[in-house]
Length: 340
Ligand SMILES: [Zn+2]
Ligand SMILES: [Zn+2]
Image (spheres, rainbow, N blue to C red):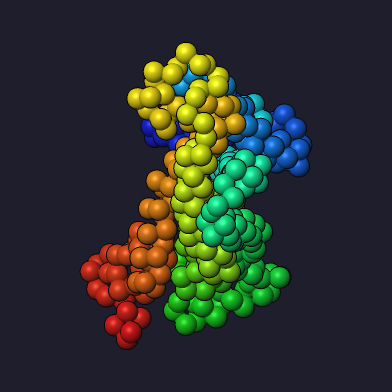
């Protein structure tokens, strides 16, 4: 039937998301659920270490393709081997894969700061203090955003309670998608939304964030914004301290003394490539700086939405909801919107 309706691709995706192959047989994963989570969580920090080490001991033209190949291999192992998923599907978003990339990055930034930056840049006490505050705030709020319940809407405990809810809503003429979730079979409050990845309704739903392995809702939105803000601040302070570290390094390349001419022309390049330690710091700082691109955009978007008192989901669906002043399909404004 899917072939007749020309929807075989959508059918295959739906089968995969439900845990079945195209032949209708349930797909199996390599390990049980708990070990799958642990192995996905352990892989990115280890891979990041390999990438940073590769970048610190090999010339950039060899190290960069190897680093890219490393990321590709990790993605392949997580999706095709551990999760046994054919394409990028919800199973990847349901796993702690992206949250582990953040954890691994935070771990290696912390390691570089403790082992390499603190002993070598003692004259920047205030910058170290600012970085330490950002680091603690970022790690703690990341942990809270991951572990807190984002605001799960309760489901009715019994059939009779469900019947009462439906009868109540129907008698008030409010039995619709905004007040009742047919996936959870439960009443849901205004501004909530059903998240198909978490398979539950979240109150004041903002978005599902794979980076925090959780929905962002009424209970963890504040932690999420502090996490992103302290992440941006922390990366800026980390870059500042890394530059201070490079500026006090010897201007003679210790790895390859033949590079002396290059040293005179490009002193910063020379400092970075002077030792494997410095190259490791540069690799970690570059990776952290790369994250600034999306985190600054995300933070600006979040702060703008807080100013407008709207969630990401509401901003992207402004015209759809009656309670946001949107129009019904026939063009009439909902009663609720008129009375606001
Ligand atoms: Zn729901
Ligand atoms: Zn979710």
